[in-house]
Length: 484
Ligand code: AMP
Image (cartoon, rainbow, N blue to C red; front, top):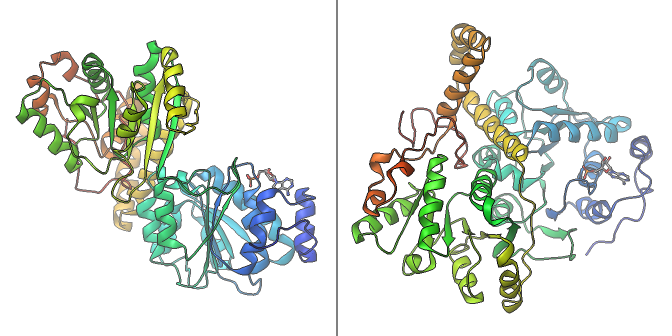
């Protein structure tokens, strides 16, 4: 392992000046560990949270490594949000200012002019969101043939916001030889899979509690929730986490019915499997979940027994199971076939003791997470839609963009003038950018078979936010959900 950096004295005068202007006197832990490795040119994966000083950890070696006389993009940092890209660019600019290394932020929703000027002038470091970066790459205004360093910041967020297809596209522009660093607060399978695609024999550094930790097969965590608000919290967690696919385990048939009905009414793409359903109805639901046509399956342990679904991204326990073995059986339904998974448990008052026993018996510590607030959910959904919007806009031709501006800008401006118009606009955006919508009641044949309350099937989706499949934005001309 490389030695840790104990102070900043090894940096050149110009960089030291930038560090002093930032007010930093001593390297933070992540900087002490990461900077020596980046100096050797080795790829690395770093598990560190925001606030740990990670921008300095990759920023300082970047400004040190790049050639100030070469007026071309030499470092690219991809971040999940505009705010983060802006913050990174601001810090990097300060770090490099006295050694002739210039940085700009590149993200959507802002004017092209200053970004194009900076690219023409030969800016060396880009901190940006994938959508707009790809926009410039696609137009040939940005080139990466001189790229030396590529950083993915908050990689878990990049992936959970649906940037994976964009990141794969960025890869086609990257030169084969480069230093690549991946920073992420958590290390679920999709982050590790990203690292396999982009990194070469990386060093793994963890700065989270517990020191060096190798990634787990299944990520386990739980939420403490009151029995009364369990249904609402489940719906909120689905919206926030946006699982690709999940099985939601209940302990009783009544709960299975109730949870399925509740989720459907909220426009969530869920259905159930019940012991008293006909074989044909069960098979139909199974077929849908296997083909990816249905995202969430609600079931009891008994009803789920014997059904073979191997690559669910999440297993969610609506209630803690009755035995430590059942916990392992349930969670074993994710993280199969070489993929890793996530196991979430909702634990309410009377389950707490039992849940503790399950952890002790299985010799595992399942961390608690705070329940996302309404505003957390709203912000997350806004970010997801931003990604889809950028993706959609990027795939328009110049002619289409021109037409949109000439013909539709006046329509949008008119709609924006009234509350009703703004609501209509929101509905149109929802309709255009939502890939997976629940099936209409008529197609939910299994439901009628199980004797479910017909009211459960009349869920109105138009005004609710259904969780989205993060498959990288809309594809024009293709829609998964029904037209309403
Ligand atoms: P980050 O995790 O990169 O968002 O950084 C968190 C905060 O720590 C930012 O406000 C940085 O400016 C600050 N910071 C980074 N490195 C140091 C350091 N070595 N000493 C003091 N503050 C730092």
